Image (spheres, rainbow over the protein chains, first blue to last red):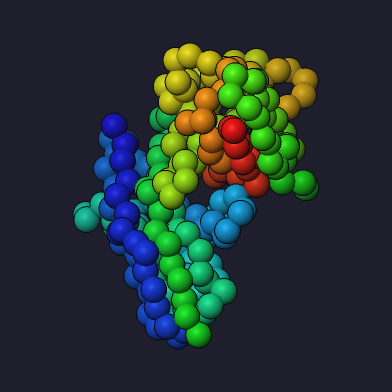
Length: 113
Length: 115
């Protein structure tokens, strides 16, 4: 079956530091990959996505590249802000399974001023 | 275009009562998914529905939990005889196929507390 493994948290960084959150996956088909962000007390918001190998998703300064050879989709940001503090979830969905998503356990990021 | 709507946002039930959680998908979306998030954990898939059909309920507990998505109206997740372990955030997502991908849009969740 499908699975997603995320870097364990929590992660604490100073403002303007570089961020990497690792994500690797196992899938039987050709999944689409996603990063979602969840702010306290809210639902999940789609941050970025990639639908095929070597695609790069980007949004709000965050980037992730779909690496089929290493089955990875690491999230990066060059300079984090306090407002980036949230929980980040890596996920995959498989079209053969009608988009049912498999999520990682989430990584809590705290950015200190 | 309104997003996915869930209500209530917060629900308190005593042990043994029933909980009904509602989800209205985005306009034009015919796929609905329910996920459960226990405190400090990730989201776990529960059930996937299309109008009037349950497609995949492999994540649903075998007892007390049921889901429906009628021809008219919202999707309902029903938990009978709730227990303390049912306390969690329940998220609904909806999607439609876009090429080779199904991009899911999440509602704000219903936070169920069982006392």
